[in-house]
Image (cartoon, rainbow, N blue to C red):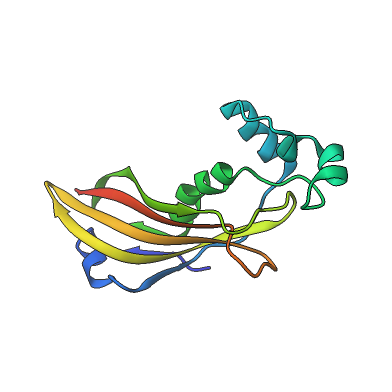
Length: 154
């Protein structure tokens, strides 16, 4: 997918209500799930015990942590767009997050983002984005989040 290039932080205001684009597909591997489990201490069997998950899970195998899916948002957004004339971008938080569908290990996901709101702050703007993490071949998203970033102009 072609990356959207915004010519400075003011360009967000011109894009309120518009989709910024869709990222490429990224595979969620068992290795990525295991590394996330090690990083967070969340070793619940439904994520890391492949054999047990195949036998006992209602999903037929291991699934990614919801928070792993959410943590992929930043990297996928960097793939979607870039903002010129920016000194700094800060993850300011989340207004809302839902995990409508689990991500089976081995599936691919991608992000879709739309500019919801832009507020002026000292030295920059605060941008709220609606981000949807889609699952390849899925009917419901893995994650629907409203993420908030602060961009400081150069």
